Length: 406
Ligand SMILES: *[C@@H]1O[C@H](CO)[C@@H](O)[C@H](O)[C@H]1NC(C)=O
Ligand SMILES: *[C@@H]1O[C@H](CO)[C@@H](O)[C@H](O)[C@H]1NC(C)=O
Ligand SMILES: *[C@@H]1O[C@H](CO)[C@@H](O)[C@H](O)[C@H]1NC(C)=O
Ligand SMILES: *[C@@H]1O[C@H](CO)[C@@H](O)[C@H](O)[C@H]1NC(C)=O
Image 1 (cartoon, rainbow, N blue to C red):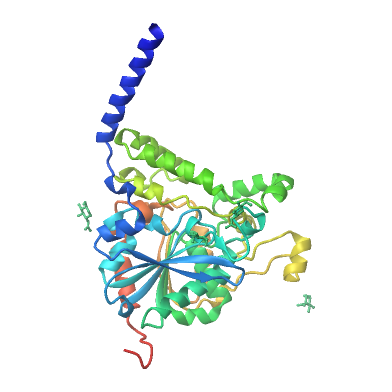
Image 2: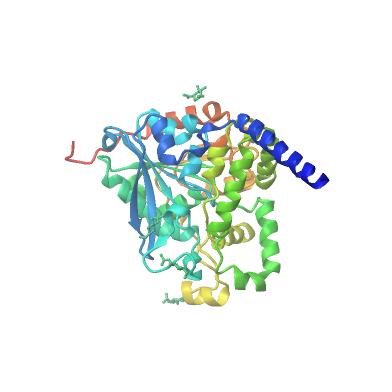
């Protein structure tokens, strides 16, 4: 008897609790897919284009549909590690792609290889180990150049603006260093959470030391694994999505985000709407991308992926992997690095700035309390980023029309 009463009590409590929680949902847009969100924000939704890299990855590029877009200055966004194009829309009507579109730009976003939307391959399947044998080096050498050409094919201008967040910044530097001719197609590159040197990042260094200790295990695992399987990732994502959309759990979500991102002073705590962002983040990536960052963090060399001395000799004809040629970056760059960004420290940025020829502006430590992720979610974007961003973009727009057209 007691058993039945107990279960009945639990049953009704759960129902009532569920109903109450339902009322306390605070993000009605969390269920929307990216196309519907973009439509709701006043654009024609999104369309997808695909390019195939020389090593067989089929890369998804998203275009925000709007009238006359081919005449507007094109902007291509490149997201960070484990994120995807959708992560840029976490602030919805106040997200960077929408603000930029509202100011008359033609908006494009690349989904990096290994994310859900860019998980097809001409030969390989995501269940093959070999599928995950890539780092951000390949994204910069193969995928971004193709994406740039695809965007310019659909636009009258012969130059575009690149906006990279975190790994997106790394990828841009790889392309502009190793394929110098692409500097002619880029009127400005904007780096949010600039990510080249990581010698100052104690987190990366700590991880790298741990990984070195675990080298024998990593050699077995590390070469093969995606960071999470898509299945595991989607389960974590769905859990966070459901959990974080209730006001009562918001403090817990903020704690999780703060701790995983090491940003005590981040603006994360002011974020109102979590669920769209959560559902559109954690999209996949390879372990080698992380390993490559650790190598850069430990050695202080912005260089190609190291396979170890013996294989390096075969692949690169030298025991050390060759440096990326940052001296080739001719197109102007804007570097952002917030005070609380653990991934770019003063020594990292200073080192980078001395190696670049054409730094337009550096927003550096101390200018604001931004952390690495704040560019996607912070409340103060309009105050600390958008105004400066839009002025700079304007300065570098509409300069070069394709000769003979329009
Ligand atoms: C975005 O939407 C919110 C809530 O709907 C509104 O308060 C805010 O003014 C909007 N911001 C912009 C830039 O349109
Ligand atoms: C991958 O290819 C399959 C088969 O052609 C297709 O059904 C699927 O939609 C593709 N996935 C993506 C993310 O493009
Ligand atoms: C990928 O591999 C799995 C397991 O081997 C198989 O079930 C699936 O059909 C394959 N998918 C494609 C698109 O080849
Ligand atoms: C390999 O490196 C050595 C020494 O740096 C050089 O002499 C040789 O020409 C290189 N070989 C190739 C194929 O580049």
